[in-house]
Image (cartoon, rainbow, N blue to C red):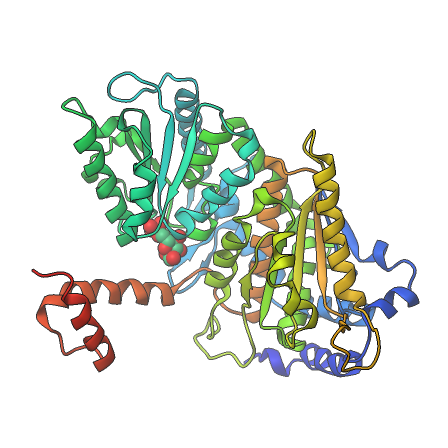
Length: 529
Ligand code: F6P
């Protein structure tokens, strides 16, 4: 059996790590005046500079060899062609089909899936246009003013992040709200500001069985019926994005208002499907198509560029260098763009739910680290919060800086300050400052790694490309680690036990550990039956 850590390339990388452990990144620049040109690349409206990463030419070449010796070419082809690569759930993984703007069929179980995808896209077009132009009205003929997306995880984070990122393209007459938490405070706060007659609820749930979403959807329906008066019509105010049409209809949603998608779309990869409906409602269907187009272009780049010039592959390999050889435990995502403030949360789910695995695709335990802890928040706020630890703390934390170049009209001074702050930080992390002895509390050690990703402008198209870039980065890492990036059994365990605990609260169940029983007793006191 192939063992990754015993492979010649893995061992060579271990050797290179030892050899380069005391290298300074800045010396690589001194030794090679073309380093920036060599270690940066453009794909469409995205520009990546990875020259401030601690990789020598030899390290990079060996990392590329690691990718070449992996199953990447084969697994990538399998993903795009609809083979079953999500082996534990026995499913293909076809979010790329949702943004496939090329011609030609794509068969799953002998059936071309493209016609259904196009049909659903048309449904999204018709519906989003009708809501946006006021043709779709609530039960009493008023146009829709507020849209509430009820969903969690992948059924929340993608559309939530994208709607916020593209806020400046939003329809001026529509407000968007996202309710995810089972904590009633979340939905209560949102509903308290709304008028039932002008509010549209989207129940976004792949399975239509997620406890949090169903509870919130029922609370929303009760609120609607309690407040809308005798003519209230649930069917005129509730729609669904789901693979479970029957359950959505049983909830009271009209058949024609269930926007379908398919089992082969993973939750965290679903913003390109009907789950992206809030995006189409917010920025318009054409904008939604631009988002898909950006992702499609990144897909084409990922499929065709040689590994040495392939943006997702390079980002994945640099991540592997950090995680498996340099000992990094986390990856910071720091967008210098307030509109991207939900991006770290989105990428956190994408990466951690995908690659938080410790057995390979054959079910054998792995003897290497897999997905990192992904975290972050916007700059320049982060500079005044956690950057201190990144500059002078004891941990090694790679950072992805993300920003868009084009300033908002009238905000040039702000944007200039934003971008120069980001460049200053990336520079400072690499250079550090030596003011005296090694114990000098004022000196920063430097040699801390970062990449800079620049978008020409934060457009729907560039956002689509950015998200697809990270999706493929996560995929490449999963392939090299030989894990299944598309299941989430740990999450399912939590869902199951939550169900069991709430079912057995009355039974004073002895099935749980003493701590859980003790805590349950305290909880029970607050819910007299
Ligand atoms: O968090 C686990 C998960 O299964 C995600 O993958 C998914 O996005 C989320 O729960 C919500 O599930 P559903 O869309 O079925 O409500």
